[in-house]
Image 1 (cartoon, protein in one colour):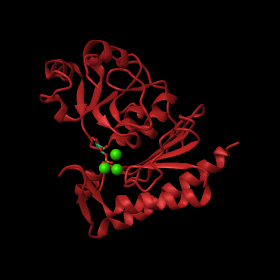
Image 2 (cartoon, helix red, strand yellow):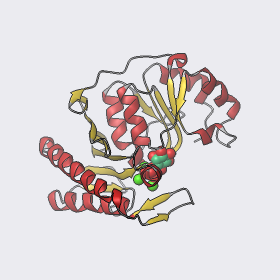
Image 3 (tube, rainbow, N blue to C red):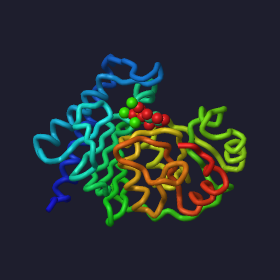
Length: 266
Ligand code: IPD
Ligand code: CA
Ligand code: CA
Ligand code: CA
């Protein structure tokens, strides 16, 4: 039997300490390199933070597996057992340019089921936390269930680049969606945007391509609150492979899938 109270206690302790370490780097010069393209940044702090978590997890739970963005984990091929899915800094572009609007994101899964989710706002020292069956908490206070909302009342999180021409979905479908919404926002950190939907600060978040570490924690929070977390064509999200991502309040999820997103080609 897994002692989830103990796992939760350690996870919180490590996240707080990792946050402190990241804040201390604000006055230091970053070592910045690129990955897949010129906009895909990684810093020494992303790498060191992931290594910090891996060292802690491995020395405490040697039977747990780790999937981390920067590749220092186990590269699991199945989701069996306990798997920690870690994005050490979600929003590296923001971390580099703004020193704000970035998150530590950790989802802990048991045989593919999300049990504990943490999205930690390092700058504000604020924790969005969810536990399967026990609710979602922001700064220790319970977060209410998500209620239905119409598109006209909704604020949508989306990346402006995908409303330009692209091969996966006709922008003539996306233009009315953006026009009809009450407003749109783009914060540059998937974990932050999913946490904001959980809090009701936004109503949906839509993005063409993410990896499991971007949404592993957020999915737990959203589903615990009665929201929906799927791909853009309504399929379940995988914790081993990336896909498009559509996070939403109930009701709005069905409305957008049916009227706007169903033509999306994965
Ligand atoms: C990125 C952020 C961004 C999203 C990108 C992600 P990273 O994560 O979540 O908002 O649009 O697709 O890769 O690289 O900063 O951890
Ligand atoms: Ca990255
Ligand atoms: Ca990320
Ligand atoms: Ca990252």
